[in-house]
Image (cartoon, rainbow, N blue to C red; front, side, top):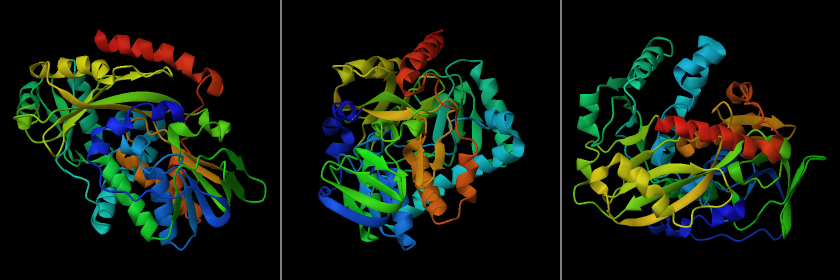
Length: 427
């Protein structure tokens, strides 16, 4: 899977082209010791490392490529408060009390990211403009009204507003039947945000090693994570590789499904606000989601289409273009300057998989909500390792079930289900 991710055009991404300078860090050579070893240099791992180091722990972080070159630096950059599973679904599954606790913990992610950006002076084009969930069918609007009512009356969250078809047309130049606006949403440049977390972690004393692929995890007498050129011995380990764990912990990986997602950025537009009047982050409510926003230099950044095979399309721009032009017919033929993809992971319940196995802690499976939820998860991991596990346990206690067939068969079986949902989106 790492090779698959490497072939998905990160070097051609809009984010890589507009990234702040990053020094590049050495790979691990030899054996070292630390209180905590983190596998994965994305937002989950960096947040866990940063918060642990700030509490006095010695931390070594192993990144198989470069910091931020996994999902954390490739995603759509959408700030969507909450969880992928909606309020109504949460209440139905867990009852109002636990549902409210889960949602409000997840909502902390927005403030945490904002605080980290301010505290560490991270320049990442943060826009607190809101997030809009667009209804693709007339019948969807009734469900959004029920969701907004549940959020307000059961969950105690009143920062959402239902928009009619006429109102959403004032926000987005596309044919939708209404939408749900969350005023606490927004968007950012995810790679520059991740690099900012990396700089903060370095300043806090974290030892970060790039191009250091973890190939073996040993758990006898503490933990030991080995690479081809060295190893880290530690009291605790954090697995934060998401879809790229490469068999490091099969008993954990069976609960997540790697999914390839693709994104493009157009050439700068003459009048970008004609598309999205108030610079909102937007996604629709299809099962296979279209999502988009404007960039700081006036491009449309658009994600659409998913694949569940190990072979990326030869022409990513050509793969995504029909989705983009379906939403914005006026952009038919508009040049696409950047096209890339990456692997994310989903779970069966669409809730993140957070937990521990002895001295090994992990968080992944954000199901499309990782742009900010991953930062919160990293903090919860650091809290749990420090012995403060009440908040960590809220998520750990609702761990998603494994995919049928385990790691070997999860892909083929899931593809069959996803093909049905993709067909349903077209009906």
